[in-house]
Amino acid sequence: MSTINYLTRIEFGEGAIGQLPALIDDLGISRPMIASDRGLLATGMVEKIAGLLKADAVIFSDTPANPTEEAINQAYALFQSAGCDGVIGLGGGSSLDLAKAVRLLSSHEPPLAQYAVVEGGLSRIKPGMCPMIAIPTTSGTGSEVGRAAIVTTADGRKLGILSPHMLPTIALCDPQLTYGLPAALTAATGMDAISHCLETFMASSYNPPADAIAIDGLARGIGTIERAVADPGDVDARRDMMMCALEGAMAFQKGLGAVHALTHALGAVKSLNLHHGTLNAVLMPAVLRFNRGEIGEKWSRLVDLLGGDPDVAISQLNARLDMPSGLGVMGVTEAMLEVVSQNAMKDHCHLTNPRTATQQDYIDLLEQAM
Image (cartoon, rainbow, N blue to C red; front, top):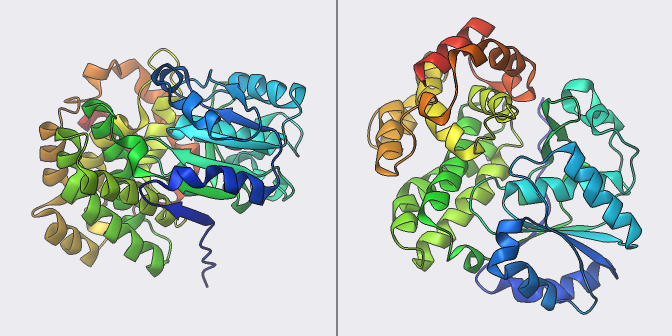
């Protein structure tokens, strides 16, 4: 038996951002807080989005690259003091995840760790949170339709807080917001989206609708990521990459796997502060090889779509996109592998990898990716 649930309201298309004022009214939000980051603030986009609103928006722009409980608590304090009654997440996955966590605190007591899935938090998350609109400005995490917020808690763990109640009320997806994204960030976030499609397609749980969505997203991503990187204004490529990200996250309701178990653990290493999508890209070839014997005919399906053995095809794509050549050049050291592998074993994504990994397997995968 499988429980299959899709998902939330999505408004998708060029110019969709123009619907924001009406959507705010539909949700009954009178005092929204925009959660974003300093990089996006510097571009003027945050003020532009705030300018669309009828009411003055409160802006929190201190989202770190990997959202922390400290930053979430700061944002929630602003939310409370300003009398906000709704959240707009604007930016990449970090800003959207921070917004989700603020929304959780609008009706749930801290600390956040008690709501992590590995701590049995799924049953503790209840409905009744304030409304949220998620507006992605990258094509990567798909957090706008994801039921999880990935946060680094006060005790230093990078944990997934997961529940259907965490889904944003509305996902507002406008490819135009990604037109000026730099090439390197387009590549890194795009490989994040592609990794979601690949991992969820391989995941052990039974969900054929998710598999079909993942394959469609993968085809779009593989077919257009290099065009999107080469030409920031390629309208068709930007649309397909945003759909790839959206579909990757719609599909990973099914579950992910060893890539994400490892990247969550590596992302918690404070001294490195590594980009999640880049980590996914670097680790994907080794995990594909590891899973090959367990995914059966799905391997052949990936061969057809990628034009060769998937591990080789992804390695070659990484090289063409100027992804790092390995974890070593990203600052990961052999001394870190023991703790990272231990934390990967505790990650919720570990449970749905098609081949059950041991701690030694994780160490081997990390060493292959060095």
